[in-house]
Amino acid sequence: MAFSASDIGMLVSECITIWRTIKPRQIALDYLANEVHELGTELADVRHLSQDTVGRLIVFMGDVKLLFRQHTGASRTCPSGRVLWVFPPCLARPKTPRDLIAEVQKLQAELHTEANIRESVAMRAQIPNLLSMLALRAVVSSERLRSAVKNLAILATVPECGRKIAETGGIALLVKVVKKGSQGCQIEAMRALGNLALSCPEHQVSIARLHGVKAVVDKLMGKRVYREQALCSIANLTGLDGRSLERTWRKVFHPLGRLTEKGNAPVCRLHAVRALAGLSRREKLHRSMVDSGAIPQMLGILDSADPVLVNLSVKALARISFREDYCQMIRASNGIDTIVRILTSEPFHGHCVGAALCVLANLAGLEDSHDIRQWEKAVPPLIKCGESNGPACLRNSALALSSLSRSPSLQEIIHRGGGLPVLVNWLSSDDMACRERSCVCLANMSTTGNLERMLDVDRAGGVSALVSVVQTGNAVCREQAFRVLACMSSQRPLQEVLFMRGVVGPSLSVLANVYNSQKCMLYATYTLANLCWVRECVEEVREENGEEPLRRIASSKHRVASKNATVVLKRLSTLNPRY
Image (cartoon, rainbow, N blue to C red; front, side):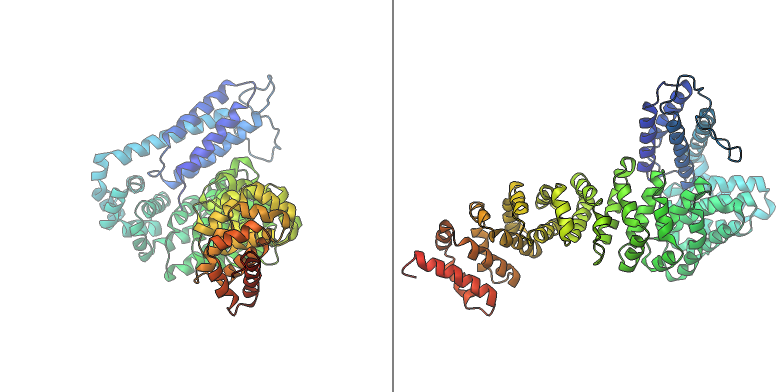
């Protein structure tokens, strides 16, 4: 699972936003903000960067953001080279603007060096010679060997070079270096394997077959000096699947879990979370992941101030939450409140909202989960997020609200929170699943017989939208839309409104189609039986030749629908003496 350009762009945007709130402005901070902005412009595309480089960039952006926050609202006497807070002497010295300026200049130099090597035609032509140095590593000095492996690691980020390395036997040579090379060569070889796995996914199987994954995992369990690069390479290799790797992957969950805790190096923590997020894509590994304590760890990371960590953790929880027993564990770990805090936190709102809504939708689907104390704070963000985001967010919001609407107390909260206009708006969505869930939610909220709520549905344009769903929706949408209309037709103040909105025609069309479900016919006949007390409705039934389908249903074995059809036919007979 790789970092994306949106991760860098989001962090740059946050840094610049915080910098603009600093008063008074300081020369060192202004220079640092300008460097960050230029760095973000250069990194509009991070596909050809090593993930360890991107990880260091993300950690650097986090340090800049923290420094800017410390200087927000600073007094005029505050010197630009010092931070505002006083730290205990036992802690490391906090970074100053000068430290971060030196750091960004070092990062820019590394990026330019990597770009020169990556884009050099002469260096690409040297790939066979670099690999031959690995094959003859016993007679090559460690400095030259490390330089060769480092160049291969940079070139491996380019798909064409990665394929050339793999096709000329480079994977086997790199695995041997990871196992038996010097310390510096082993680190660069792990980096090369990780970059190769991302740039050339088709060669990931070769890396696993040649025991490259096992070699990197063994380094993670070994000395601390290998930890950062081993974590980065493992995170790059999590796309690999297969029964032979399951045992290897299960070995890494406990060390990865420990490295996600606070107190570890930020870069190590970042790659550990990225590795867990990547492994969460493998459903067969979910049990081992949960048994290692991943759910409390992921929920703990959601309290972090780092949006990249939050995004990765929420995605991992979303993939795990599709099983009911894992959902129970998330709820028991106070997961509902934690996810709601994420949705209401502005910096993270647009970045991980889809995955957070997916977790809430799965939690809301639990049969015994509708505790009003836990869910009353979740309803407003569900309505707001579904109102202003993409199709996946919309679908998950509708799914969560339809599950929560089974509770009468939460129905009232959805109503008071302005949910009815949003649900009516979703009835015209292009996503059929969203339309289904919206119909179900409105149907659940209509069965209580709350007249004021039904009037609000009509004021929001709900009746016209439901008539449109009956005519254009699928079977589930039609059935649930008629369920709402049937409930509304039982209220005398709404009967004439339903007639004016054109409910009679679609109801007769449903009765004429023998392929509709029995529930659909039941709701349609119930609606007509209630509306037949409006004289104009009965006249429309007669004009639309509705007598024939009503006679057919009246003579059917469906007792309730037959009774409703008979009521309508009797009403017709009072207007038509020849009947």
